[in-house]
Length: 535
Ligand code: GLN
Image (spheres, rainbow, N blue to C red):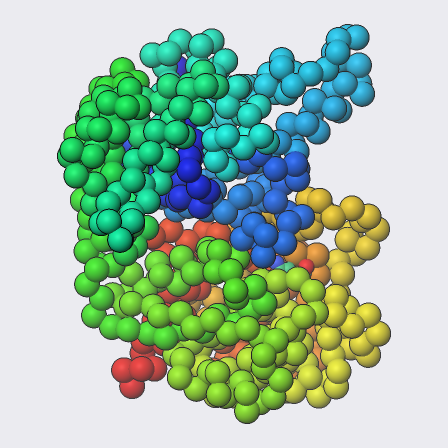
């Protein structure tokens, strides 16, 4: 039977509960337990796919095409397991299911209510996640902060669920903030006490507390918190800010967190195998080289908007013993070739990531042009591939004003256009080309060299595609199409072979990179940049 760990947050949001959940997942996996992680998001959007990245950060895409919260990216990266739609539950999706059932008459005349119908649906998602993945342990993280009105149905559902499955089969971990007051040099525990009180007022007594803090927490402070919050002293765990998020599992492990968790759940404590993770941390902390890599995008004020891209660059850096320094470039600030040069002359490689809408596009095209003309290693992701195609069409193949119809409906050369099946779609939610699709790799290409495979699977999230009508013109001008759908109709990867590394893909490789297994395209970018630097 699956055991459950419920993680809630208190005092403030953005505490890094996702990293705590993911880290605990890693620690349990390292003891041979199978783990799945589910995120409950209290907002009413059915999924985050319709939210601006400025609002909510990146939309993480799973193999099955689920558009999910960015925490699922952390989960996948830490526990090294693919997750799916069932791992991300929003209030919107719960309400939608309940309302659809009501419309079909499935409640047989009942008054449909928050309790038991909404809470019942939340509980059934928990059961479904454990049935689907059949893990030894399911970690369920509730987004937001305890006390938020919108999070209440989730907390109530968890309270009921715990009672129904037997309290020995689950536990509650509350993650809170210990603010540090520099004037008095004190860590304050009162907000944590209040937050635990709120959680208790909903009927949940947390068995463990994780304290987010800037500075170490003394034994006396931990004991005081245990006393006032009615937890065991060994179950008050400190989680200090770390240089790298990947250090968190070992930091928690050192305090005996996993042992306590297993004890509370009545599971055997096995010897953990954390040697490869410790090697990773060693690599992270002892880089031998350094690289400056630019990310030229639209949502650069909020780094979370590109979190998987950032992590993928770091992973490839770890593998190559290189520290990756990021330089954020707001593409809308680049209007001329000179401005592109000014921004890019001090970097070793550039990535143009995914995005939507016309804002900043001309600047991205200048970035691509600079990279192509100056042999600056270039990796284009989704929109970054579409920009590479447009730039090449305009400046190499001579198709003046070529564009994507996303940005200019009247362009004379629609080198990027809506897919046929997208033309009649009306709504915006979950209607893109989403999730994992196969891609055939051409012999002799850079992609073949990097992947070392003829057929790969990569995750997608886009509406527009390379327009095959221009295939001949662009390839005659020197663009190489090195990856296509198996039927050859959709272009998946383009390259410019005159450069050391100019690769752009229609899919999002950043969703498949793992800290101990970097993605080949990111690895290739970093290796090329390092080689150029050495030469
Ligand atoms: N806006 C482009 C499209 O919809 C690219 C999407 C993306 O980069 N994810 O096709």
